Image 1 (tube, rainbow, N blue to C red):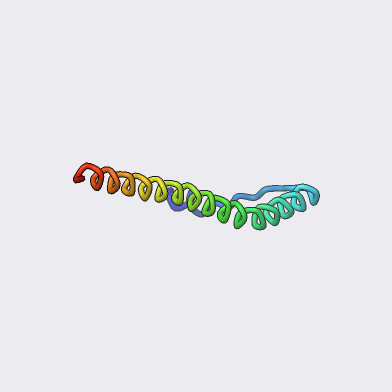
Image 2 (cartoon, rainbow, N blue to C red; image 1 turned 60 degrees about the vertical axis):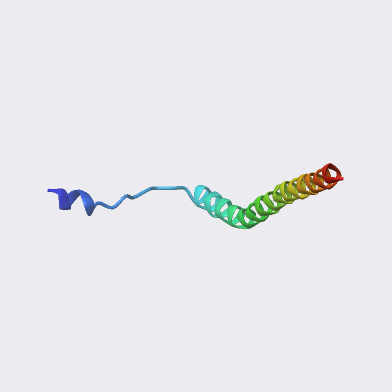
Length: 71
């Protein structure tokens, strides 16, 4: 009984316009996805750069503060 449920095939009837629209949509998405991935990567690197810059400035100011404190 359980085997009968797993061997069913789904059949969808679609118009040619609907098939063409789905094909065009898949094509556009396949072109846009890499650009979205590149944009997310560049944005992440941009934010990461500012975080690193913040830590560099923080430790530089801490270094200068310790030098002035020793004098």
